Amino acid sequence: MSDTNLTGVEKVYVYEAPVRLWHWINMLAIIVLGVTGYFIGNPLPTMSGEASDHYLMGTIRFLHFSAAYIFAIGFAGRIYWAFFGNHHARELFYVPIWRASWWQGFIDELKWYLFLKSEPAKHEGHNPMAQLAMFFMFVLGSILMIFTGFALYGEGTGPGSWANSLFGWVIPVFGQSQDVHSWHRLGLWIITVFVIAHVYVAIREDIMSRQSMVSTMISGWRYFKDKR
Ligand code: HEM
Image 1: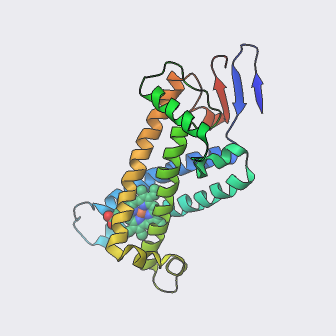
Image 2 (image 1 turned 180 degrees about the vertical axis):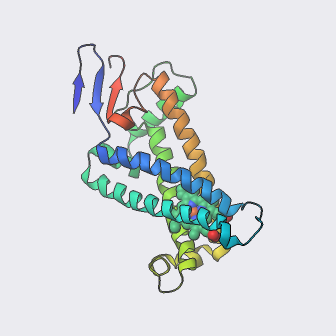
Image 3 (image 1 turned 90 degrees about the vertical axis):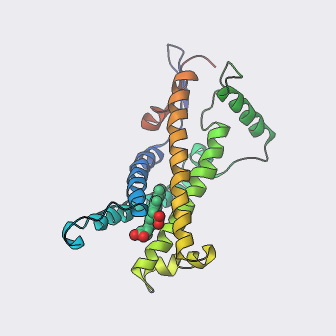
């Protein structure tokens, strides 16, 4: 669906409602997971009194696990939507490195970011650099976090629990429990670096490339603020 209004601003419908809803719920879940995960890995100084009275780490872990369920179910729903949504809904899950045009677009985009090109390319969906970062850092990063996270969770819920039955095998694959903790912890920083870059480039492109970014994830429509 695309449209040109009377002022010559061209627009195209990119992100359908389920993708937009997922994006913002996922953002909130990642903030909760990142902050609570950080404190699980680097706990606060011991508080006086009975731990069960203030239940501080218990609450932090409870928030982590609640957000983890939202994050994992959201990710599964997002995979479902890749099959049933529009073609933009699939862009997150693959990088078409077999296409020469994709590489050309990637080099063009890199030049644009390095200020070696004065005119930005117009993209209805993700630009090739975004697609690469989203796939390798976000999609693979999320899979790492879900598999390692539920494997650790399964250690707590114990043998016979669904988490242990489904994800228990992950622990010997990585070595032992502490290795899984370390990979899960590394994932925090992979996702954190992605989030910082993602927010920076979205705002930068919104301003510099004259094509809407942030509002597109709210309304679904991408506006090209000049003629293509
Ligand atoms: C964006 C996603 C996530 C981030 C950034 C994140 C971050 C973290 C971090 C930094 C730790 C501390 C690791 C350590 O030093 O031992 C942690 C612990 C943990 N996370 Fe996550 N996590 C995420 C997703 C998940 C998911 C999907 C689950 C699934 C249930 C999960 C379950 C756990 C468990 C069980 C622990 C260990 C808790 C403990 O030892 O008390 N996490 N997480």
